[in-house]
Structures are given as structure tokens and as C-alpha cells.
Length: 218
Image 1 (cartoon, rainbow, N blue to C red):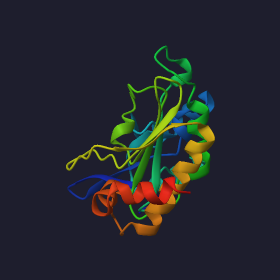
Image 2: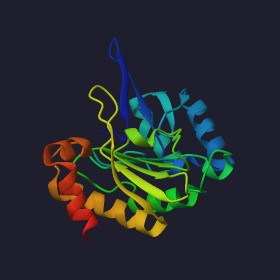
Image 3: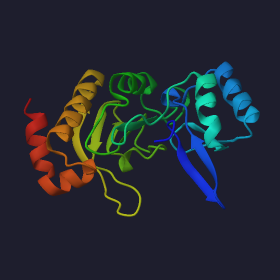
């Protein structure tokens, strides 16, 4: 990966790249937001707010990438080919639909698990209600608050060309149990997953009952 970037376009040999500095769970300070904008402007780039609660700097020249990263002084979103690359958190603490202020839990999950290497790319969604505006049900792991204020966890959701509905793994649990369950799911994935295999495809291959037996019997 060229300086933690992605080739955006190549028109008549003129290559332009996109980079994405890591913004923890979509929360950014005003100073960092201004810094990103000023650096993008300096190097002739544009900004794009993407669906993963991050900001991409687009239209950069290859020769500028190293300088841009140095001036940003921020980590890249994607550090490994296969890893837990995104943890998306809804704004539950500020939402009238929320059944539980789940931002704190989302931050704990982010700080404990973000970026760990896995057999394939993975995403986690943390939602403060079953409406799940951040589409937790289409993520590899969803941590969702039920109507009673308790948490339930879904696994194996896939969006894209070959979508798969997530399975409900466990219900009526608290924050500590949710954190432990997420940890165990990722360990299971590392143990049984093939290179490049999505968690949902692993579950389809081995069965949801095997996952439940190994995780819920602990």
C-alpha cells in the first residue's frame, strides 16, 4: 500500500490517491478537523465524509503522500490488509430513540479491538436501539440495545454483492458480557477463518450452532 493510500484514478498516466486518517469512532476535535482541511487545501486535495465515520483526503499526488501523512501526524484507518477496520457507533447519548447511552461501550470496543489482524476484513456496529441507524445488522458483529435496555449481539452480517442476514448470537446481556463476547467472537474467527474469508461466510460454512456452542459454553 503506497504510503497507506488507495489509488483513486489514473487518467493518461496522471495518478491521484486517497488517504484516510483514523478518527476514533467518528469523534474529532475542532482543531484536528481544521488541520485536516488546511492540509488538504495546501496539497490541492478535496475532502469526502464517508460511510465509515471517517474523512478521506482525495485527489492527492503520489509525491505528496509522505509529506501529507507527516503533517497530519495521525494514524491511517487501514493498517493491515485483513483486520478489524471499522467500528461504527451511533449517537445514542444524544438521540431520543435510544434505549441506552451506548457511546461509552462503543469507545471501549474501539480502544480494545480496533485494528487487530483477522483472517478477513471486519466491521462492528454499536447501536443504542433496534432501529440501528448505523446498520449493525449488516456488520460482521453488531452490538445492539434491545427495548428493555439490555444488549444483544448479532454476527455474520454481510452487505455488498452477496449480502447475508446476521444471526442473533446472544441476548439480555450487560456491557461486560458484551465486551467478553466480542473478544470471543474475534478469537473464534482467528481460529477457524480462512484467509480472506468473511465472518458471515465462516458461519455459513461451519454453522451458527458450532459458534454458539464454543462461545456460550464458556
